Amino acid sequence: MTNELWGQVCNELQRTVGRTNFNTWIAPLQLIDLSDGIVSFEAPTKFMCDWVSRNYGEPILRELRNSGVAAERVAIRVPEGRPLAPPPVEARPVVEKAPVAPRRPLRAIEEQELPGAPLDARFTFDSFVVGKPNELAHAAARRVAEGGPVSFNPLFLYGGVGLGKTHLMHAIAHELQTQHGELRVLYLSAEQFMYRFVQALRDRQIMDFKELFRSVDVLMVDDVQFIAGKDSTQEEFFHTFNALVDQGKQIVISADRAPGEIKDLEERIKSRLQCGLVVDLHPTDYELRLGILQTKTEAYAARNPGVIVASGVLEFLAHRITTNVRVLEGALTRLFAFASLVGREITLDLAQECLADILRASDRRVTIEEIQRKVAEHYNVRLSDMIGPKRLRTIARPRQVAMYLAKHLTTRSLPEIGRRFGGRDHTTIMHGIRKIDELMATDRQLAEDIGLLKRLMES
Ligand code: ADP
Ligand code: MG
Image (cartoon, rainbow, N blue to C red; front, side):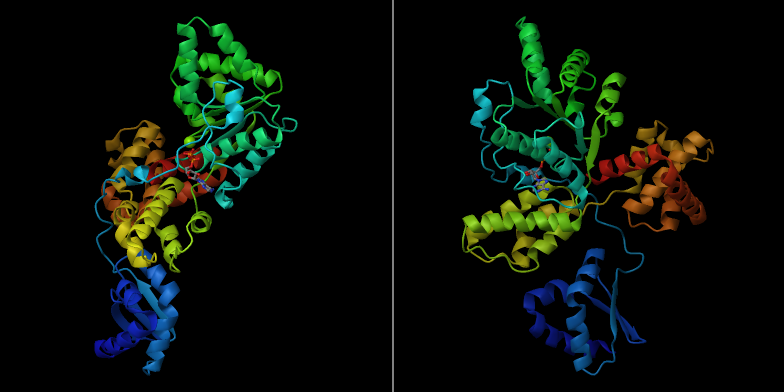
């Protein structure tokens, strides 16, 4: 097929899919060749390849056939040897500034004079979208919220930033307040716990402090990693924790990582925290992100009739913004604000224009250097040993972990990875990756290490 013929097909496509879609998705395609019924194109990004294949593969085939080309399949790939992602762009915290409703304290809790933190009225079970990555955490939270006999203590929720830990804890508190008004529920962050404790020490009211914390029916402490390394606060927390567990009171704790992974947390506390049910919130997947976007859009449209979101926009966002739910929400909020300002339907173009910075920041890929640095730090080995020749197990294993992560978190080829690891052969890299794959199946610690490192680098 000639470029001229493809040009004619393009004219047709422009009419059938619309100018905007055409310019965004089809115009950037480079025709490579046609053989055995397969028409091959190159597109600038992996994402575009997937998107165009999925959404425009059919129209392209149809128009090709209409022009007499015997095409059966469209294949789109990124050019080989293309330089990787653009240099990391500093993620600007624009989303943090997105307008949000003020956090409203719940009166029921205020009236009990518990020194808790105000609850966000929006963080309920109703507004929590459940998907594969968070279904266990959700189910456990629901169970606790029933307020029945304590079946696991504590419930320990952990996961990366913005995956819904605080949301779930507030939801438990809301539910208990409405269904079991008689229960004394105390929710606060570990930081607030420390603050109250220090204040009590200063005011010589430590007995009151102890009494108060031991008088609750449900204690929820958010972001417990905060008290790591703070010795007297940890000590007090430990005693409070034990006293409540002994009385059969429910405790819910959250942290950004698993109990065993929290540095500078006393061993006895770690083991106590592991006694109950430990569940993690996994990074979101595409379906969950899309579900959250749809739910939030419906809610917004119910309050603001007349809002129109063109089809494909939410799917596009769910594909592109993979960081965390907070960023996703921020993007949506900004989009709505922008659309209401300009009074236009929310199209793909509008979304791309208005969210350019967020989209660019989400494009950020991890570099091999970064992986080597983080892995070296984690295993306490020298960065230079990552690329050096030492074959000692204590160094070779972390090196293989870094190889494994380089393969999974970047789009570099094996020879490229080999070069970054002191010029090793690609077969060495392949061997390293296989080794880790094998070990992970039996070595839980290793699997957890890798999960943690992945989360660290993807957040
Ligand atoms: P974390 O405490 O884990 O850092 P948050 O609970 O503060 O995260 O969640 C960040 C934001 O994302 C909140 O506005 C929350 O409502 C929202 N969010 C997170 N997960 C979900 C979900 N599954 N469904 C709906 N909203 C969610
Ligand atoms: Mg939180």
